[in-house]
Image 1: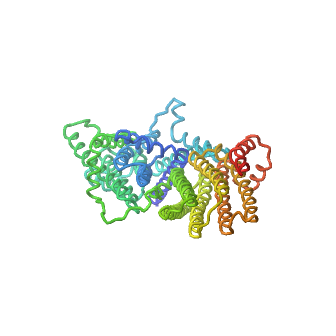
Image 2: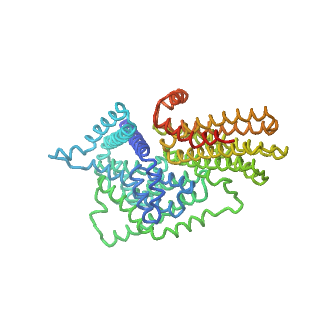
Image 3: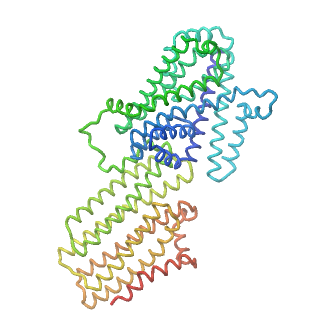
Length: 599
């Protein structure tokens, strides 16, 4: 019965340890998502910087598996190449040792020193939990809540560690446990296998090392026993990562997983030989059979990963070649029709800010495509070109594909969102993408009107052509502002869109009235008049979509706007805001006044 209770306490402590790591990692990723992307994308120009980047990022998010999966996502997005990804993998193995170095705090001897006593886990854990609860429950700012999550995770992690330590305390006087340890000590390969299998089951190398550190508190764990298990733990985590990387991934992603396996396998073989040589030559004779504490375990894991990475760093190119030889290119495999969509990798969802940033890039790409398509379609009225029409329809197909893939990706991503800022960004993108697709639809409408005009040999009057040229300039400008506002997430630019949209509405109304007069006077044909009216209608709708996008962009950072766009628009149009009125007046002078002066 005592054994069953001990196992339950040990597993309970392990559960708290794993949950604490997850909460702490989530808080760190939420607070540094975009930074992580920038670091991974920019600081990997050579293998040394890649190694350093992998180390730092893993130290921050407390998970080598998370770093490698994130790297694979960025690899699929084209932000990283295979060589850069490999160097990050090497660094990730070093970074994961930070957790063990933090856990060694339980070995601090605080006798007579109140400052050191504060850093003991049994003191630090409750303090971290108190800070976490205060930040998470009583502070409203998102950054404070992220800090709260980190502190809560840290506290729960250490409470789990203390629970495991208490659970295994009876083992210190257990003869059966000592016999099992002796058996493992004589068979290092069994130790490696045990570390590997348990890590694959637990899915966390940090948790397995934490269990070892907790067991070291019994005072009966020897170095001979521990070091093979640590090497097995490193093999176990790379098997797990390789399996994750291989599911639904590109060839390069699978190669990254293979490199991780090769790296840790070579490192294990190298260290097994090295340890045998050191023991035979009598290096530190008291070390091998001596008992270990959590500090020695943490130090060996760090040395193992650091030395392995440094030794294999010059052979990064060879590791890539080995991976490419194992995972060969399939010549018959068709590539992505639109390579840009490879950025929408489900692995990036583990860090929502990065996933949202990739969707934002797709949305900006869509805006540029829509602008290009509108520009081409308006040229069709001057001289209809069949090849230009084909290009417009190809762009429309591309926009439809981008829309479908982006919306499906965002729907799946919604289950991973926790931070309010991410949810607002998600909502904004869901709505903007649909508006961008509609702008592309209007381009095909213009193309159809132009074909009808060419087929019926309709000609616009000189005045009508001049009128269209002015309003086309206004539409080009509002599309340009929309792209700039989206690309830079610039609220100032977004606020300049609505005044221009109002001026375009006035221009459309003026031109429709004028054209009606020309129809009544018989200056224009009925067919030509109907086409002209349709053009004005869809130009106005294009401006309306740009206005919608601007409101969504502004609503992302302003809750009042996001809750009620229509009320905001009404108040804006009725307001006496000087900046708004000044922008509107400038646009009237730029477009509406020249239109009125046309004869």
